[in-house]
Length: 374
Ligand SMILES: Cc1ncc(COP(=O)(O)O)c(C=O)c1O
View 1 (spheres, helix red, strand yellow):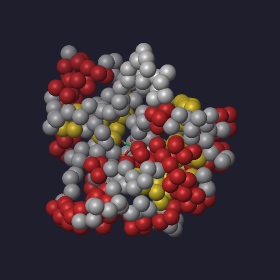
View 2 (cartoon, protein in one colour; view 1 turned 180 degrees about the horizontal axis):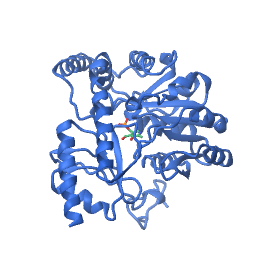
View 3 (cartoon, rainbow, N blue to C red; view 1 turned 120 degrees about the vertical axis):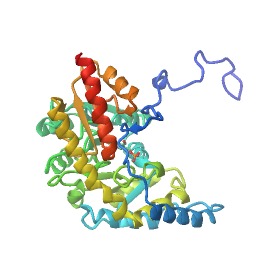
View 4 (tube, rainbow, N blue to C red; view 1 turned 45 degrees about the vertical axis):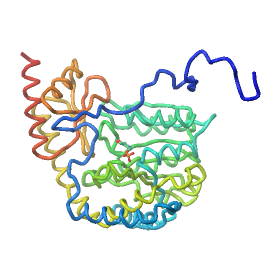
């Protein structure tokens, strides 16, 4: 071996980590079709007023792009804290808020800070397929329990599993993706207590779509120093393209994540965009009620057609069961309607779009089922 490293070529090129070999990058198909109901986006684009304010804010930020952005994004943390206190937060302060490029990055940072070699993360399947990927990328052991057949959590069994494995991080989406299932009241406190010194991340990416009576974990944040409530601007705020996710937690948790974040990870353009969007929060969130109604209506319609449909507190519905779900997915796509082939075998997930998009989905599904049933 020379001083500069190995001289013989490794047997496999490139010399990827063993456990990453042969793995396809995560991601739903990005296809240019008329009706896109596959990645739980908000179907409503920004108004002219929002576009103008974001553009002006980005223009102002552009004049300082020779400088690095505010590493602590203080103004944005202040605005996010104020927003959270309008949606379940109980006096969240700016130093209790952290943000990154999507809640994907926020959760990877949490795993980097609190997971790691010799540590474990735990969740309950079926659930968001990125969770095991965060664990893998942060070299954290992965333990997975099962949800019930209706996709709810058996809380006693969940507590037992936590007590058995003593995970360093518990990932609890509420509502869960891809099933739409929210955690019942009291579940968060019970599982935070079971986790002891482990961090409990309640992933509320779809939190704003929750039904009447479903609480946000933010309500119990002051009672649990190990609780992290994660949110995103990608869904209810209709800002998926801007990439802004965030969480609220004890200040000590935010400070711990600051150790693993890359310097200046949140660009000046991202900060300006998110701040402008937060100024327009009432308007951007104005469609949430329409989407909740659309969700309830879609769940009802699917049930009337004889499908099994999971209870949903999110902006999507999981329905089935199909002997050959891929064939149904493909035949919908052939009619210009893209949904998601995800979740347990036999089920498909549809995101809630505009009324016109939902009509196109229903018409296409009716045709496909007629064809399948001959
Ligand atoms: C449960 C859940 N958490 C987190 C995310 C990540 O969202 P983003 O990185 O856009 O904030 C998603 C995206 O679909 C999700 O379904």
